Image (cartoon, rainbow, N blue to C red; front, side, top):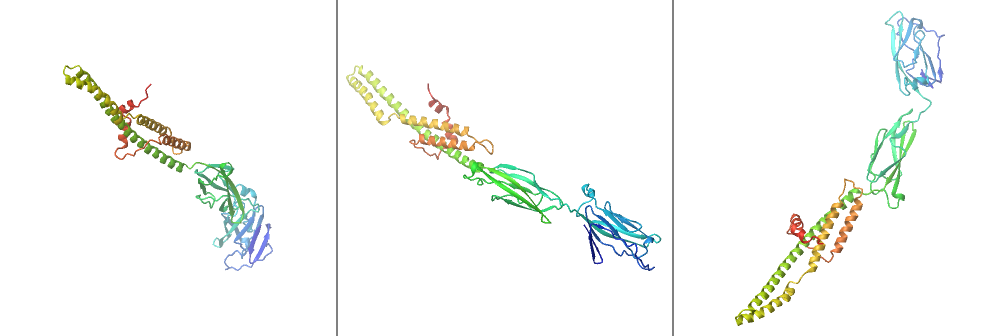
Amino acid sequence: MLFVYTEGVVAQQDSLSISHTDSVVQTIPDMPLRITNLNPFFTLHADSTLQYQLQINKNPDNFFWYLKNAPIGLKIGKDNGVISFKAEKAYFLSGKLKYDVPYKVVLGVQNLYDPADKIDTSFNIVFFNTDIIPSKIKPTVSGTVWVDEGETISFKLLCETGSFPIQAVLMSSSFPIKDYSIVQKCGDDFSWTPGYDVVKETDSGRVKPVLLSFIGSTKTGMRDTSVVKIIVKDALNQTLAREEYNQLTKNIDRYILQLKFTFLQLDKKLKRTKNTRVAFDLTSASTSLTGTILSTSGDQEAQRTGKILPSVGLALVPIKEASVPNKPIDQNQASSIRSSIKRLEYMRQDNLLVGDKDPDILRKINKLKDELKQTQIQLIDVPVEFTNDMSEEELNRYFNSPKVNKKYRLKG
């Protein structure tokens, strides 16, 4: 479509042809050269034809015309000043011409006999396409994207430019999301990290579908929409799980130290009881032996004493049992505590975390919880003592000493 504006007259047609061959130009010798009907702006659509006759205020037979910086296909008759152009689509498909781009063309006319008698001016020509090619939004992901809670999804929003480029992009979501990067134009990156509260217990299959709609608009109001479907899967909050694991292991380590101190107290008590009972046994045996020896003496007084001393030795036995009775309960408790400590230490070592995101962290937490609870129930009657005067290193040194290991090792 061609719009030509000359002296207040508007002409609109697909093919324009203006001819003034019958016009009479009156030439004044001192009149400066001037183009009388120059249109400064031409608009032409594809597959249309332009023919435009330029006029000057002097005898055109003495002048020639020329163009500079003319786009491909644009011509002018050097003798008659007729601008002609046929906007073939092949020029635009090959990229030699572009739509909606103003081309500035320098136009000149010069006297054949007087080089000083000339004029240079310019006009603009713009081509537009009646076949509108829509612009489209093209995300770098397509179809359905799966992502776990706590993991980041990121992709770039690209655009396929048509007749009019996309100038603004809006985004909408089927589910309220937060902490995402805002997309406003082509080339922006979209990034979102689903929180651990996206998937609810009531959601089917423990997944949450989220539809993201990217709506692009051009300056002419044309719109294109692209939809990305994100399936968010339920996942374990590794941060909270790791904090829970660390707190649980601290409780187990503290409970192990308490058991070690309790074991130390029981073991020392058993050691004192054993020493006292040995002293009673030695005293009783020596008294009986002394009585036996004195009873064979020739001295009557010594014989009487010898008859009494074995009874004294026998009397020490019930005194021993009454004052320092044997404590099998303490012995059993010490052995039970020692075996529980060994088991907790083994379970603690066997359930260490692997990497920053251990996939079995929940199973290991439950295993340690069950083991700790079982041990506490097993030793519920044992008075667990707290230590304030011994360090962890001292307790471990005593607990792992060769003497203690030999004392409490299993015997066949």
